[in-house]
Length: 194
Length: 194
Length: 194
Image (cartoon, rainbow over all chains, first blue to last red; front, side, top):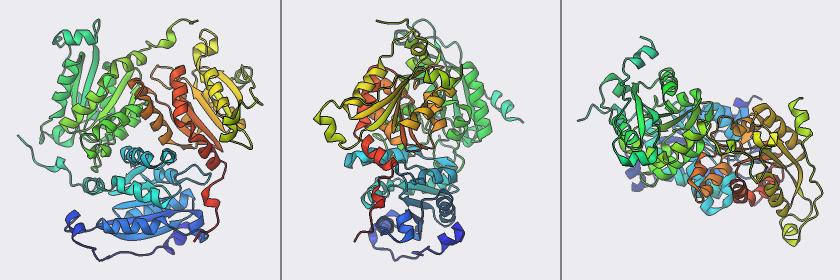
């Protein structure tokens, strides 16, 4: 079974969520941005561990006005994670991962992400850790990186449900502007001024 | 037209500025350190956009006791930016760039800088973002890096005039010591103590 | 004389320290974690400079419950530093370096460390600088990185005795958990819950 096949077989499509209310319409009126979630965990992939983080991230993203178009669970293997990142980035503007950012021998999500991204956004990971250490000093051990591939933003979040949700919350208000910039809606395209 | 030719044709030489006053003499008495400025912007290069940041940086550096020896405007192309960095580093101890550090598809200044630098100084970029987010959370989206090539220090600053000036101000007091170290004036050269 | 030979000839074995008291037993009861110290300094290697940082780090690590199994002094050369890192990582769970993280032309400890490590832990270096700038703004010029090779954690500390000790103190409480994770003692190995 190839990595790609094993990925696809576990994709659950969450597209076309109903909008939960006026709050989200205020955030992004005309068109929903798309998001994908990748849970990186040997245990969750093998079914010996329940994925607590993925569903929480799906709810937070949906409540924040994103259309969650895919949710994937992959094992802690660089080629498989990288393949999931590339596949997800084809359909989603925002890809978040949870898990595999720590120091355990098989934690390699940042390495897979580095392989896929053409540009890194170090300030987002710095901010997650800066806010994270206000909750727990262990946040400094999170090796997550953020970066871009094509017009997609990739965020590595910690594996624990609380860590994943809090880290995403920390940067979530920056994401719409980041996606606008990635999509080419920049101030630079304004005509010459004064 | 080669990248190098297009660069040189737009170089304005600012060398041998008169010293503006006793303030700067206090900062660096005997010899002026040299600085070069590179504005990275398709719009400024094509003349459809006015370069607001470059002149502000030139003034701040001059007021801080630097001899600004070159000011260059280049488009958002890695080879061109890299060539400008290498050329500027041949004549200046400090090279600052403004622009191209964001998430727009053509923002590639950090990638060009990484190509040129042999060593990075992550603490300077971290400090710029750490202070920057006190002004605007968008500072976390600045992907700028800092590094060295030969005896030259390179600083990537944001593209907006306010962001560029504030980021430079944040690290400016560290630059004289950094350049002393780069130039080989280290405490390590002191003789054996006690 | 090969780099490896010159290293080994300067190794002082500090293994089997007596435990200094109940404080350390509280930190790590059953088995001592092993630590190695590498002082990177041309002057110390040549004997023209006294190594002030190495002995202070050895004392701090011992007082914190580590068995310091090797103390090495190497010159500022990437291949020699890299060889010392690899040799030290074979016998120690924690390897700390002091020196070579600044901007002097021969400061290349981070580059050697990057060559050896398969994964980086950026949050630890960020934390050292974040706390360091509360003591001195010059902490932002420390280019140190942290990373892992095999089951060993490597920390680059500044060269000054005060900077080295304070930086290590900043992250020391995180190290036991980091080494547990590196050694495979992870929460992920717990059985399926709820």
